[in-house]
Length: 199
Image (cartoon, rainbow, N blue to C red; front, side, top):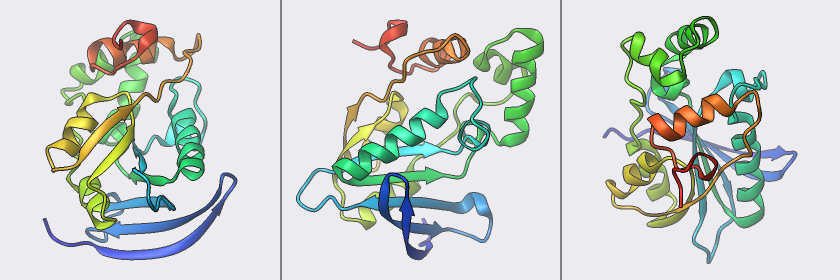
């Protein structure tokens, strides 16, 4: 892996202050990964790896729980100490065009997210976590508490030599996002108690 350029700035948020880092593997925006760091000296850091969801995080779509995941993750990491890693790869890495096409299929044909992506010929989750692991290693992290419901994220860090213990990051389903969350649980293998996929 080539080494990224790195920039750092303080960032004040409604949750409190963070140190904001940009790891830029190229000038292409999607080759930048952000890290918001809250002091974790002497602790095993709480870590959240989140991929962009512009519809949920910016426009606060009620069809997913991504805005909740973002806010809850930032709040907990500020309070407990750790690193929030934000990857600029919407649609689980499939890209915005595929994501929006998939959303339309879901809305007009009644297919769930997994079925819509399959119809479009797109992998369900093509993301990889080498860059996230690089960032953790940059901060000297060899083990972490990982806020996630996705076992692929745990495996992705473990494959890169980082010990990752999962911490559940599950929102309460709503009538508007329940079908979406059920699809993630039952077809993508996410660990979610309300859908019987987590002990």
